[in-house]
Length: 315
Ligand code: 6CS
Image (cartoon, rainbow, N blue to C red; front, side):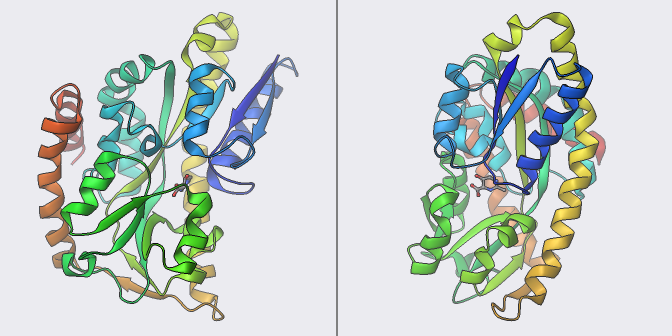
């Protein structure tokens, strides 16, 4: 069997090495019966094209960011809510792995679109980068052109801070930052460094305002028709990979903070947000949850309510 596994990142980056490791494990477990071709970002189009390809079965597997399914699975946008998950990334990963709200309820919502999220995992805490000034208060966001992924809730989150968000693929982001089409963006540290965004940005604010969450997804119809033993191996491998990818993202995020700090040709000032500064953003972001419940979620915020209870249990 030959499967196609598409990712939103390029060789060496977290999503790509995930897919490669997944492919190797499946190959070994099936003595070569299952061969998976891994595609890096760009080979099959932009992120939103990849969502279509998975839905239509043009690819069997994908690592997908919920932000790019924002106009389709409205509940999946809850990952865009700032300051929702605990600050501790390991605790967040534990919730992502075990949450019933996500692994049962949200999964059902995605399956209505022929997408089955088999697992959710973090690529690390997100930080803000900017030109002209560091982003430390809502005033700094006033009319600030912020690049976002195509999700109405990510848009609402930054509009609440006063920003002027613009959505685009990350494939266009380096040039857009360089030319000043947008002034800033959010991403985990490894991605900021590996995509060289820091070269065209002056500041990186350690905001830890959210976690970058990726999903291991499969085409639902295809998955349901797999032989039981192969489907069990897919599930088993997905579960095993949760701790593997946690360590990998941690390694890459640590490695790239040093690379950014030591890149003296492209100096980036690193600014730590104080707890007081974070609290100002947290208060605004908490109101965005009500917007999600009333305007965005198709289920009156039920999944978010349950997830908030699960998070509270962890704290
Ligand atoms: O900012 C983005 O859109 C990209 N960021 C990451 C961490 N992975 C892929 C995604 O498309």
